[in-house]
Image 1 (cartoon, rainbow, N blue to C red):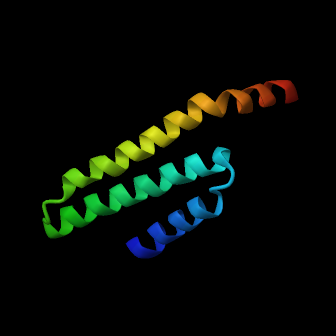
Image 2 (image 1 turned 60 degrees about the vertical axis):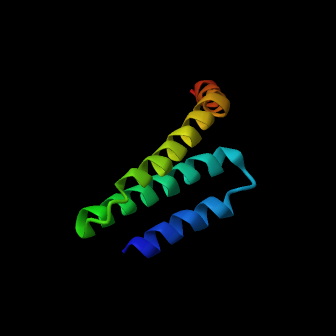
Amino acid sequence: MIFPTVSLALYLAIKTRENPKEFLPNLAIACWITANSIWMCDEFFILGIKNYCLIFFSAGLLSILIWLFLYFPDEWKKSEVAD
């Protein structure tokens, strides 16, 4: 089930690449799913690749932090005005 899950996450990230407000969270999700898949494979097959998960977890965290600092304040203000 790794292949369809990672494929769909990457497809959504690629499809939304024109809009950074949607792309960054989708990229973070794709990175986290990839990292979890690597971790799971290492747990099952003892491949010694668990350290590579840090790359994808870090990329996902960085993506979300960029989104939080650049785009979240605007979304928060819009929701306050609507209330």
